Amino acid sequence: MAVSKPRRRSLVTLGFFAAFAIATFAAFWLLDYFVIDAGQRGGAGPLRQLVEFDAETMQNALGSLSQVIAAVLGIAITVVSIVVQLAATRYTSRVADMFFRDRVNLGVMGFFVVACLEALWVSLTVQAHYVPTATITASVVMASASLLGLVPYFAYVFDFLDPEKVIARIGTETLDRATKQKQTRAAAADVAGRQALALSGLSHLADIAVNALGQKDKVIATDASAALRRLLVEYQQRKRGLDDGWFAIGDVLRTDPDFVALAADSVDDLVARRTWLEWKGMRQLREVFGAALTTMPEMAHVVAIDTRYVGEAALEAGDREVLVLTIKFMNTYLRAALNARDVRTAYNVLNQYRQLAEALLATHSAWPQGVLVEIAGHFKYYARLAHGIGLGFVTETAAYDLCALCELASASEATCHDRLLAVFLEIDKEPETQAEERALRGVRKAQAKLASYYLLHDQPARARRIYDDMAGESPERLRSIRDEMLAITSKDFWEVVDRGTNFDYLSDERKQKLREFFADFASLAASAPAAE
Image (cartoon, rainbow, N blue to C red; front, top):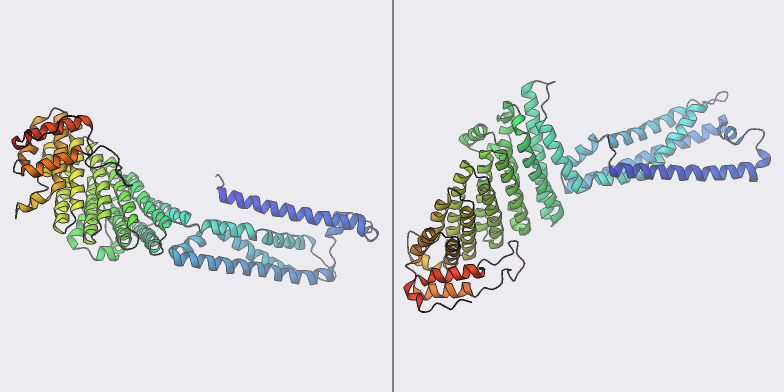
């Protein structure tokens, strides 16, 4: 087994201290023996002189030796207990459990205790007529090792408690223990234990993220969210090998607060769909998302990214139920962002949601495209909801994302293309009044942009559908929309954004098609600008 870098560094440090201590002692001992005290050495050689123990001297020295080792043990316990308690308070209570299950920590602490007992016992064995040389030598060596190992051990402890490594260790242990099936125990007890470990690990990772957000520590919060994502993604690869009992919701799961709050039908659905762990994991991500909205909104974007990765992993694994679950949580994120009136977060969530939809399109299979139409319907719903509460930019963002999906569907010749277009054209329709439609200027721009794409790729019938939808607009509004879109010359937006491009930007070829599209409106023909 390869030695990890921190352990290798600790061993090198220990070796350096030991070599330096031995070299220093040997130098001064030989100086005394051969130079300073040469007349007192008798006939014994330097090594023989060193190990010839005097009973009276040993009785005094060994008592002090046991006190030294006890002091070292006390220092180690004090420092370690303080550091572990601080880490457990700041991150998660599971740190203490992990620390005392680590073999190195147990080994070092055990060595300190054994060395202390050895020195205590050997002090009782020295008598006036008998000096146990080997036992005393062993005690001295163990005492020396205790002192030498103190500094590298502290270095190991601090490295062990590094937040990034603690988080990664929790995620790895949770996944391994939950998915490893043991045949040495009763099946029911084994499943219950694994489920309890999975719940505990997921909860601890979420707690770390939420606590870090409260302390404005983005790095740790990001690591915890990423650990949750890695756990859920890797679980997709191991899920098929698990026994049926693993997917049942037994007593352990039913006592968990997240499951207690569920209706009985919902619990049964999780069993039938075999998705209780993904549901619990994404509930934890949702908790982090909610905390981020009020403390560090930029972290909400990170959670949306991690959730998208889970959906893409489900798509790769062919697990439709997990994909649908991911979509539900994306919708929940959008609802939470709109309720908080956080335009930036809604903008970022829509970006990740659209990328998940693009991954669906890339699969070229049947059921993902049906799900894609459902996603488009969700875009339409939240776009209308955003417009109703005065967040028009979110509505425009959803429209441009649907425009991008329609373009991609056209390029990939997806069978759901026409249904996506129908949803897109309904995004600015309000059943109650036509005044709302006239107010949605950004949506009309997105539709005109899509029409230019269709005309450029010889799809006049689809462009005509957009034309018919816009036919009731006033000439002044259509003219201003056209002129504003033609005036955009830079692809890059003038602010730093994740999307990187200007929504209204069109290439010169598409601008020409845009002119042709608007030229079909008779009232605009006379005012059409000349081609650039």
